[in-house]
Image (cartoon, rainbow, N blue to C red; front, side, top):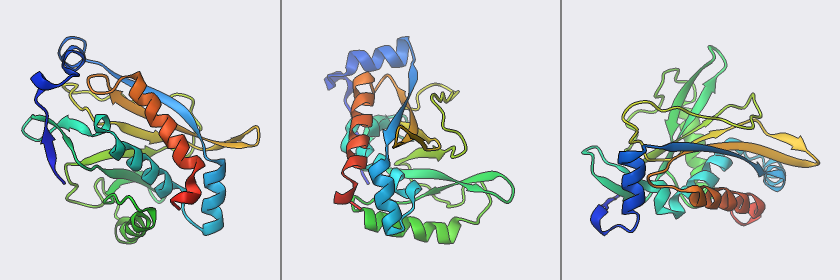
Length: 216
């Protein structure tokens, strides 16, 4: 992984970045349904789990666009990672707690899925906040609330308001008019992502779901 620094003075997004970071510090959330009818059928026929497939879809789209990989490094310097890895939550029914696990991204789903299953085998029963230690700095968060098919989800991140990476929350899928709909929420920082970028994100996620036979 490599972190590429951004020279703000040479950046065409400079006025937008400075406005939404320094003058009107602003994040926003967007929730939309992803039609997973075809995806779910393909996964069930192959005995593949849905959660890692959706995580892989999200990571694939995140890695296509620099806007979703832009952040500050540990020294507070602005830049973007050449590749992002998902850090996701797992639930422990025994005590109703959750843990975080990260699995290195791989564009090939079969390789990513094997890594996911290996991580679940090793860390799935570790009941602590960070079940898998040494999370790398190029991670972005994904969580799941599989008990609620929400129509909106707003995540409030307090602090200095400079967390620029996208934060994803997956809901419970439901059957609507013979189509399986999966609610997905993403929180974005307006300094690096506009409504257009959110639209691209959901459009490409839907394309991944519709063309699942090509990558499963």
